[in-house]
Amino acid sequence: MDAQALATTQQQYTRVSRKKLISRLKETRAHHVKAFDIALEGWRQQFAVALKENATKLTEMAANAENTEIDVEDISQPGLKFPHKPESHEDAYKEAIARFSMSLDEHIWLSHSDFAQLVMDQWHWRQAFHISGRMYAAPGVYTRSLFESPELSTDFLELPGED
Image (cartoon, rainbow, N blue to C red; front, top):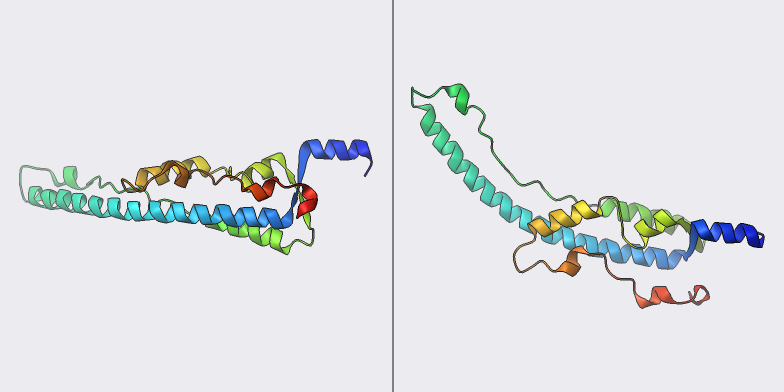
C-alpha cells in the first residue's frame, strides 16, 4: 500500500491487535453481565412489590364487582402495572468475540464507529441499558462505575509492536 493510500486508510480506520480487541471485549462483557445481574436482582424485587400492589388492586376490584351500582365494564380493564424487565446484551459481546476469535488476521482494521462500539463500549443500546440499570439497582448497590464502561487498561496503551 503506498503512503497516500495508507494515510487515507488510517484516517478512516484504526488497526488494532486482534488479541487485545478480544481481551477488551471479554472485559466489557464481564462488566456488562455484572451490571445486568445487579439490575435483574433489583427488577425482581420491584416486580414482587408490583405483584403485591396489583393483587390488592384486583381484590378491591373483585369486591366492587359485587356492588350492583357499579358497571362491570368499568372495572374490566384493571390497568395493572409492572416494571419492564432489564435487557441483557451479552450476546452482542459473544458474537463479536466469536467473530474475531475466528479471524486469521493478527491485526484488525476497525472503522471509527466500530472502534467506539467494540473498544470504547459505546453500543447503540448503551444509554438505555445504563438508565434501566440505575433504575433497578438496589439502594446502596449502585455505583456510578458499575453502569459506566470500564476504563481502558494500560496494556492497551502500549506501542503496536509490543503485542
